[in-house]
Image 1 (cartoon, rainbow, N blue to C red):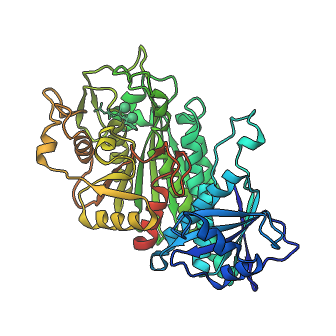
Image 2: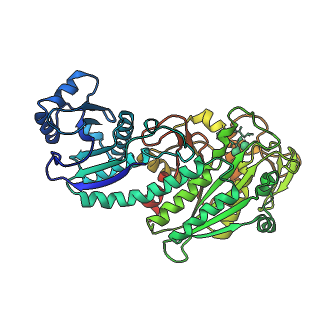
Image 3: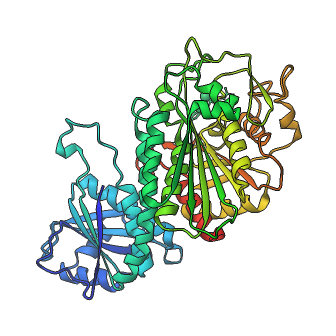
Length: 498
Ligand code: BES
Ligand code: MN
Ligand code: ZN
């Protein structure tokens, strides 16, 4: 991870004693150099203009080229970083180019950089934010990798006119980053390290931030009648847990915002076992829970003026002599019975009880659940948007809007009676899969809706199966656990609920 710092820049030229091996300057795509850039151009005898003339670099957002050993500059490289069209240069673009810069510098083997930001303090803070998010690296198990194979970039100094204001903005971003990195850490960990009990222990770290953390055991969940959640975990030697995280930063007694996460720490499919190929990916089937925990950490960290509760259902879905069988009927906490036709449709069983418990216990102002719920959502939407299902237009639109703003986008899919009918069972109140494979993500959401007490509680279900883990490096997300949802829901809270 790269360290970020800010400094006041009064002159656009670097201090000759400064110690960094990359000096970075912003270039817009209009072809006109800023006074900072043309200062460097003059100082280097025209190297900046020559470099732009020499190839594809034209200042498009995210483009980066290095002028190595620039004449008279006393620095190993001068990096030109494209900011794109001036009109479109907003906070998100700033974050994204910060991310691009980190990739560029790591590819080249730069260790330290100073970026001169001749734009607002807010833009500077956002560049730093994107750079930091992109620099995340989960390498704790790589003990023999050679230095040259590892990321090289250790520090970025951001030079901006009003450094104080930039630092103020960035100090909020730091709390979000802490939440995002927490989520990426727990989602990246393999399932022999993160299982229900160890993840519940990680939740307890939030008590340091004033969050009240309660861990329900199997015995307590049995008393509450959580037969749906418990059925999923019964084939595992790891004890199931339900963790409740309560953060009270708002008015006393005000109904909390509730966030509920699917925390299947490993999903083999159970007796309806998954194919071996790719099964290792199912270590991230707790990403919904991981996101909820990271979100509560963020809210508490930045002392959000809101009451929020995070509830995560933690189970491991294993085949075993004691595992539930296809055809078993379980009774959920709501009293509704479920015929488990496929033990691999387990997330909805976990959420059924977690959702019911959350509503019973907290009478929340809204409920948002996050789950890596269906492969079908990946078929429908791919890997750039989460599926959104809801009983409430206003909350849906709010999430859509903040999704665009932070670059964690959603797309709403329908709910309705025709879909609901598909999960009626011959012998129980419902079955856990549709009668056929049609509309798999919708029937899953329909199942969840049966555990939403009434339409007066705004409810949103986010199916994050396609977005929780990325196989490609994205603008500000390195390969692996994305922590999709932490920034989205933090923004939702901060825009509309504080
Ligand atoms: N955890 C999976 C869904 C999933 C798939 C998450 C790909 C991330 C990436 C879920 O528990 C599951 O197995 N769903 C089944 C449901 C089916 C049996 C109705 C699926 O999507 O195949
Ligand atoms: Mn499954
Ligand atoms: Zn699953």
